[in-house]
Image (cartoon, rainbow, N blue to C red):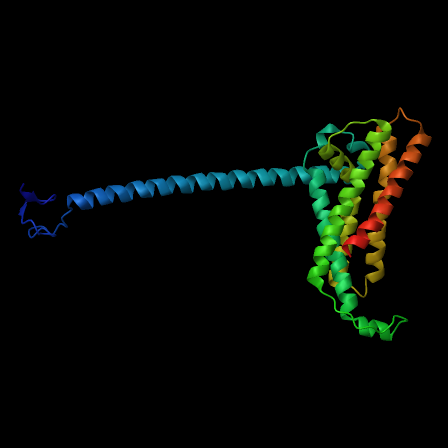
Length: 266
């Protein structure tokens, strides 16, 4: 078979790689198949890139929608928690879990920052107070992990105990995620308190130490107060005295389990 240039149709020798007449680079049959394979590879790569781009865009839109809905629910619960926790349009499957995560992280950072400051400056604090002068090694990362576990279990525990009490005493059957959303929605104010406490502990732990402790204590009190309030809202068929005793039982169980939890983790 005679080999010819694809550009000027000049007859070529078998070993010619460039046309001597027009200078066209000669494409062999092997080069053609390699080019075709490269073209297919590029097309597949483009398809994969477009697919990944669509997936990233879809994920971004999904998380943006979650963030907008979370902000909508948070502002509604913050404005009027007693009314809006009974509104089905504000009840979803992730708000309570998101609140639990936010509260866990903010309180963990706050407690770790305050503990790290206290132990780092313990010698100075003991010199100006009645604290005993002891030598103690403090590992902030280990304490952070311990605090993270404690707060996550603690916040989940208070919601679980309140729901368990309602199921046992009031015979009210409600899904776990729905109850956590309602319970955390009732306690949306605690997120504001937790964020304020975290900022104060990071900016000036010595100056704001009393304020940080007060905010964390107030956060704890708000959680306990929300239990009888939720019982009052959700079970009108039961007399108020029974709801009162049920709330006392739930709070007492939580306090005892919380003490047990502190001893185990710390």
